[in-house]
Length: 266
Image (cartoon, rainbow, N blue to C red; front, side):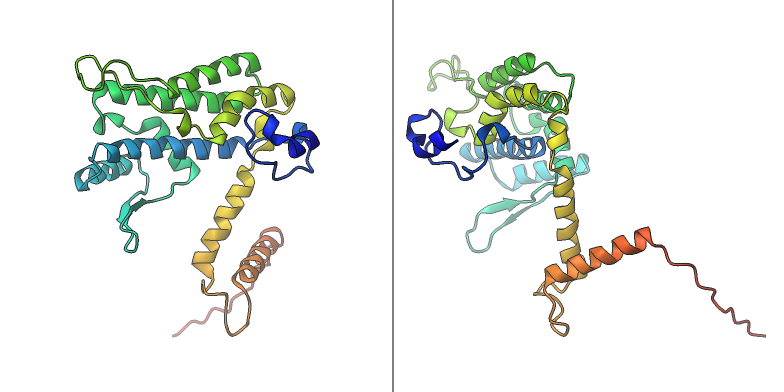
C-alpha cells in the first residue's frame, strides 16, 4: 500500500492516491450488499438514460414505469425539481431494488430484442450476486462468469448506424463501468477465494444499513426534524439514541403488568 500511495501513477487503474493508505491492501474487502445496490442503481440509470436519449422520457413513459412498479408492489414515483426542472425519482431500498432487477418488464419500454438483451444483462448480474454470497461457489467459475458478464455489458454495436436494416445496437461503453463493477468483476473471485472459509456474506454491512434505515425512519417519525426538542435543547440524534436505548431496555426488561382498578357503575 505504501508503494501504491507514493507511486500510484505507475500502477494500472490508479489515477489518485489511496484515501485509506494505513490499511494493508490485502485487508480490504468490499461489502456485497453495496455492490448489489450500487450496480443495480447503475443499470437502472442506464435504462432511463437510454429512454431520455431517444427523447421518449415523457408523461406516458413515466406513467408506464410507475404502473409497472405498482404491479411489483414497489412504492415509486417521479417528480420535477422546481429549481433545476430535472425529473427525479424515488430512491428504492434493497428489497425493492431486487424486485425491479428480477421482475421489471423491460418489454414495456423497449422493442423485444432490445428488452431481452438488457434482461439477460440484469439476470446474469443477479446470478453473480447470488454466487458471491454462496460459500460453495467456485472462485474460478465466478471469475469466468463475471468476465463474461462484463463482456455482455460492453457489447459493441454492429453495422451502419444509418442503415436500420443492418445496424444492431450494442449495450454500454467502457466509460459506463463504475468502480463497483470493476471490483466485482476483477476482485470478487479473489476475495471469495481468500475468505472462502467464512464467505463474503460474513463481511456484509446489511445490519448496519438496516440500523441506518431504522434511525432515519425514527428521525422522520419521532423527532421534530429541526434539531430536536427546542424546549429540552436536545439534538435530533440525541433524541434518536435515547429512544433506541429506551426501546432496548424495555425489550429485555419487561415491566410487570400493573393491576388496574376496575370501576363498576350501578
